Amino acid sequence: MKGERTYGKWLGLIVLTIFNLQFSIATAQELLNYPLDTVNGEEVYRYQVERSIGLYRIGINFNVPQSEIIRLNPQLRERGLHFDEIILLPTGRPVSKEPKPAVVETVVAETPVETPIDTPVVKADTVAPEVVTAVEDTLISEPSAMPDTLLPDNRRVIELALMLPFESKQTKRSGNAERMMEFYEGALLALHDLQNDSTLYRLRVYDTERSERKVKELCDSTELDSVKAILGLVYPIQIELMATWCDTHKVPMILPFSDDMNVHIHPYVLQFNSTDKQEADSLCEWLLAQEDAHYVAVEVKESEIASSVRSLRKQIHLRGIELTGMALRDLMNDSVAYALDSARENIILLHSDRYQQVRMLLPHLTRLQEAGYRIRIVSQYSWQKEKIALPQVYTSMFDLRDEQAVYDALWEQSYTNTHVSDSPRYDLLGYDLMRATVGWLHGEKETDGLQSHIRWTQVGEGGWQNASVKVVAQ
Image 1 (tube, rainbow, N blue to C red):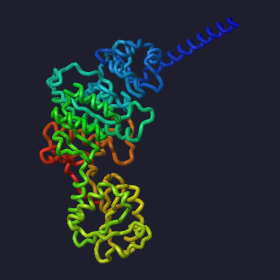
Image 2: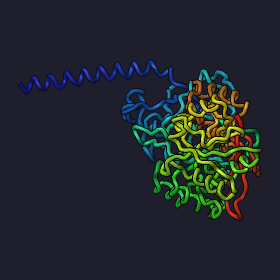
Image 3: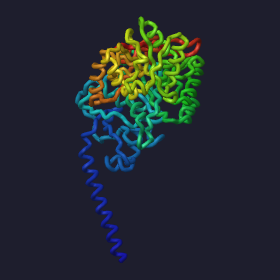
Image 4: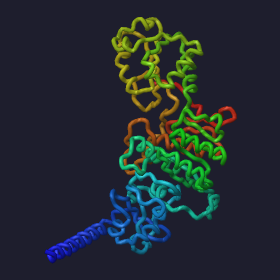
C-alpha cells in the first residue's frame, strides 16, 4: 500500500514536470508575439500580467530568475505585482544591431504609488514609435536619475502628477474607474502633442481610490516636491487635503470634476466645472435677451430638483423674470393650453439636469409644436455630444471642435482601436485639461481645446474658476 502511494506520488511529479516543461516550451514559443524594446542596452519583452499569476510562475514560464524580473521592474519590490500591468522581461538575446526607427522621447513617467491596471494594449508593429513611448513608458519606466531641471541635451524637465481613482486593487471595477482610465488616456495624447525640443514632461500617475490616507501620506512625504502641477482628485476630503498642501508649496491643482470647491480660500486651486451660480447667471442673461418671449417652467417634484436647478430658480426670481408654471402631469396629458401663449414664442425650461427625463418629455413638447404653438426648449443638460432634439441646450462646456477628427485618428493609431464611448467623452476632457494645465504653467489664462473653451478668472484674491459658460443654440 505504501509502495503504491510512493509510486503514485512519483508518477504525479513526473507528469507535472512534463506538463510544466511542455507549458514552458509552448510559452517560450509565444515570446516573439510580445512587443520588444531595448532598456539600458538590454533587449526586453513587454509582458502584460495575466490574472492569477505571480512572479514565481512568470519566472518558470519565461525561464527567468525572479531577481532578474525585479531588477528590471524595481517598483515590484515596493508594491508587488498587479493584474494587467506591463512589466519588462529579459529575452536573453543580444541586442539587435539592425537600425531602428528614431524614437521621439515624449513622456517619461513614474509610478511611485499605484499604477492603473488598464494599461492600453499597444502593438509595436502597428503604432508609431513616438506614440508607443508616450503610451507605454508612462506606466512602467524607472525613475530618471537625471536632474529635475535640465537634461544633457539642455531640455527643461517639468514634472506633473495625475491623481485619479483608478481602483487598481479591485477585481471588479466600477464604471467610474473606466471613465478615469479614459480621461488618463486622453491626457497622455495631450502630452504627446506637447513634447518639443526644449521641454520634457514627466508624468507621475497615482491611484487615489477613495482613500483619504493615501492622499495624506503623499502630503506628508517628499514625493511631490519636484511636481510643478497636479491634475485630478475627485472626492472632497482628498481635494481639501491636497489643496492645503498646494497652498503651502505654491503648486497649482486643476480640478476636472468638482464644482463646489471653496476656491476663494485656496489661491492655488483651479476649478474647471462652472459653479451653479455661474450657469444660472448665464442662462438668465440669455433669457432676458430673447425679445417678447413667454417663459414657462415645467414643475417637477421638489425631491428631484438638483442644486443647479435650485440656483437657477433663485437667480430667475432675483432678476425679476416672470415664469408661468406648467404641471408635469398636464404636459404629459397634453392639457397645457392654460400655460402657453399662442401669440408669442414660449420658452420652456425643463427643471432637470437628467438626460433621460429630458428625452421622456420631448415627444409631448413636439406634439405641442405640431399643434401650432411656437416653442423652444431649454434644458440644463450640459453634454452637447448627446443628440438631443432641442432648439436650445444650456451648457457650460463640451462644444465640439473640428479638430476632433484628427484627434480620433491619433487615438486609433495609438491604442489600435476605434474610440467607442457613450457621451460624454472623458478622453477629450483629459486631453483638454492636460493642455490647460501645461498652458497655465507657461502663463496662459485661456486655452481652446477639442471640446472645452477654458478661461481662468480669479475669485477675489483666492483661486481660479473657469468662466466659460454659454447657452448653445442647436
